[in-house]
Picture 1 (cartoon, rainbow, N blue to C red):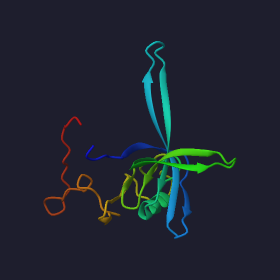
Picture 2: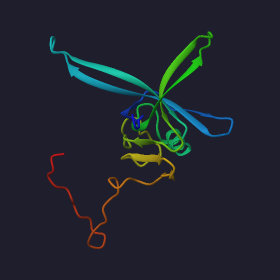
Picture 3: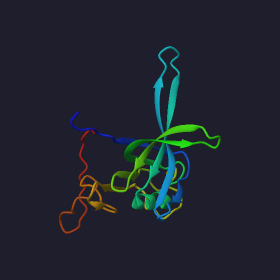
Picture 4: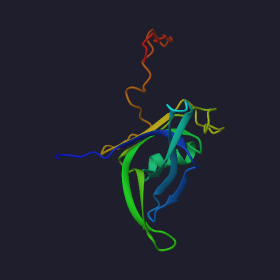
Length: 171
């Protein structure tokens, strides 16, 4: 195979508040879990069914760690983009264990807050709702505070007057 790709994209809700630790170098490491759910109707009974999958998230990116520490908490809806990594460790009884996590590395990963102010997880913090995006791309340094072209507001024509660009596109 000429190349490969290890990329995970999730939209879900935090299952617990982020836990922030520091490496010996002083750099932050943030851990939390995200729940994703799917629902369907059972054909035999007509009953609504739901399955929830839990994902462990680890952030090694300093800017994303700051955002996670300050603005997200249990219940916050987020978009996460990272990579799958499996690591081995020894549990308290000395048994070898494996765990698979979604890792947001120093120059790779994205965290977008989807909960707005007043929604679950929005709380009474200073974050001005509607969602916030922080990403970092390979080798370019940090994109902290920079939005994608799709998220930028169009320039207001006519000297700053608001123009309603809402049309009836069905998507």
